[in-house]
Amino acid sequence: MRNRPPLLDLYCCQGGASKGYADAGFDVIGVDIDPQPNYPYPFFRADALDFLIRFGGDFGLRVASPPCQRYSKAWKIQQREHPDLIAPTRDALLAVGGPYIIENVEDARPELIDPITLCGASFELRTYRHRLFESNLDLVAPQHPEHHYPLTKMGRPLKPWEFYHAVGNFSGVETVRQDMGVPWMNRDGIRECIPPAYTEFLGRQALALL
Image 1 (spheres, rainbow, N blue to C red):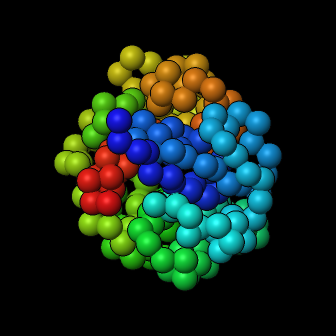
Image 2: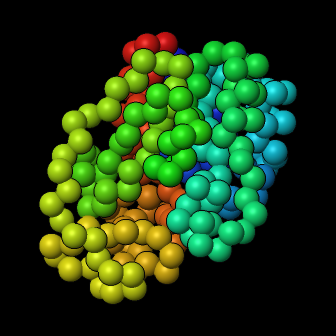
């Protein structure tokens, strides 16, 4: 059996991205500044950038999902203060050296360098949930299908012909857990979750390139 390369997941939250990378063949360790009692892999509660600078050189791949609230539509409406951590995270990853992947939401595109877009419909999920991924590895995205299905309205039960939009106080938590493949997560975790199918797809590419 081949060795599983170690992977550092920064800003890991409840571990959606981590599960995909683990399924792809990595040994995952997560880091988050907040407690994550639901996180299913070895976990350190710490400042992500401090941990990266101190220990990041011990990992074969470093991935990071800096908080996306600054780029969300809710932030634009409410104008609450949220840190801009994409550039500082990239700077720290480059200082440590080696391959990296940074993830964020669509509205963060101007802050990312040549990102690819992943969509849930490409992975037969019942959600679109576009996420952007920047990397210094030559990663590619699958074909992006057209969006044929409407999104369910906020707080309404999910109808058979609709896709869910897991934001805010969305309904159908158990359905979403099963569709995304994150049965351990609560609603808060799902709202911020990267579907594991995305990162398993990227992780398999990364393993081949490493």
